[in-house]
Amino acid sequence: MCKIFKIMIMVSVFLSCVSTSSQVNAQNYHGGYSKNSTQKPKDKAARPVPKVFSSQTSSVQQGLKLDAIYNNLYVSLWLYAGVNFVHQKKLSAKMRPEKFQLTRYTKEFSGDMTKAMDNLNNGYNDMLADIENAEKQYIEIKEGITAADHEKLDALWKEKITEFTSKAKTYFKLQHHFLNTYRKLVNFILKQSGSYTYKSNEKQVYFYKFGGYKFYGQSIDSLRMTSFKQRKLLRENAPAGVNANFK
Picture: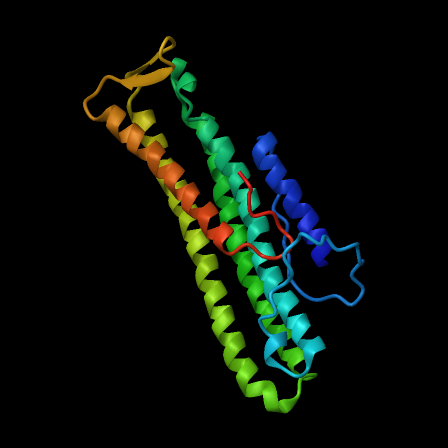
């Protein structure tokens, strides 16, 4: 999939996070450089693709290809994150205080939880496939780079891929933590067997059993903090061609 198309999908996904809770299917992307990519007028305000590799080799054009491949790995991570955030929003909506006006049941949560976990697993596997594909493209592109630069580029490529892989795994671990925390919260609520009440004048839910409200509140805070950490990681590693100020 070309870079331009990739970014268009990513923007659509993030708009969905803000404006709708409708389901979005994950897209598998294997980032790369395409000679036939449709060229559109450049946004002069947009950040350029960092010259991570092209600045370290005399084979500038080949180095630019590597820059694009590396940047697209981060774009790919943003795409997967965008779909995760759609799931997060849908799950979080079920924990709003007004939802506790009625007794909660397993089926109310199970379907969306399963979809969110499947999306996490698929996204993680697709991300690993993207990294593997980038490694293959590096080997191919390196053939067009002067031999004198191979040792330096090999070391730099290994360093940057290791760095990206670590950040990507950190992101997905946070998503797993979000879903695991949510699952524990759901189990807790179901075990309460209706031992809670919703006060419409305060728009708050209260639990009758000791410690119930504390666990509920701490769990909600944990979900919010986990999502915040994910977004912070993405903003700090925003690739060229995306708006880092998403909500």
